[in-house]
Amino acid sequence: MTQKLVFAAAVTLVVALGACSTPMTIVASWINAEEIKPDPYKSVFIIALTGNLDVKKAIENDLAAAAEAKGLKTYKSISVFGPFSGKESIPAKDIISRKVAELGCEAIFTVALVNKEEVTTYVPPSTVVVGGYYPSYGYYGSFGGYYNNYAAVYYDPGYYSVDKKYTIESNIYDGKSEKLVISIESKAVNPGDIQKASKEYTALLAGEIARLRPMKK
Image 1 (tube, helix red, strand yellow):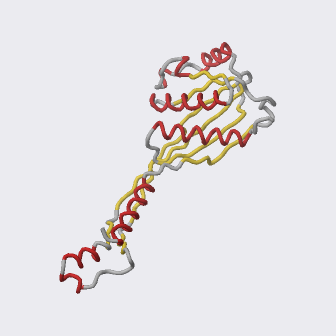
Image 2: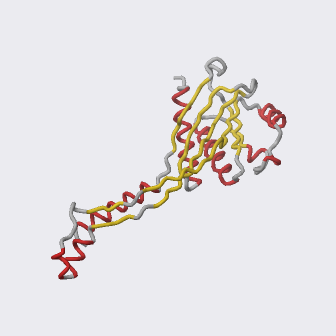
Image 3: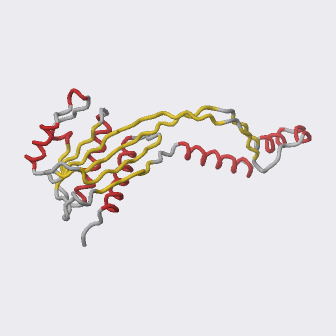
């Protein structure tokens, strides 16, 4: 393989990896300094409000693992109430409140998808010339000359790209007063593998919560 073709292959790989990336970012966060307790919470009830059971399980498990690593006692809704998903099977708010009080949870952590949109973008056609020039007519006299030079020119036809964008909201409520104490809004673009996206989201939340409320020394 010529140096030009090696370079072209490398460019193609970088472009492909970039297309598979799943950016996940925090766009807004807020802490209720007047309501949040001075001491860190010691227990939390975690509930992911989603109809996708695989997503619900992954998020609740990952959030629980992250909280337990910080020394918190955790309770997951999927374990307490079973794998509910549709609106008809979601426990009433009073039932959840009673269970939180019964378990002695000091905080309630909710995760919910609040918006989903598909954005279609047209990518116009383009021609990429590796090495900065087109092969001249004289190279057509042999296969080797033609291949080594013309293979450095790539034409990409125009196409439509559809991106799926999700807005996710995570809230932390005080277990007793049920007042909102922390809220974090995040956006995800084209999330792929559930397990990978869940872990990435959990790490993002953990970092933002630590920033909003640093651990006491």
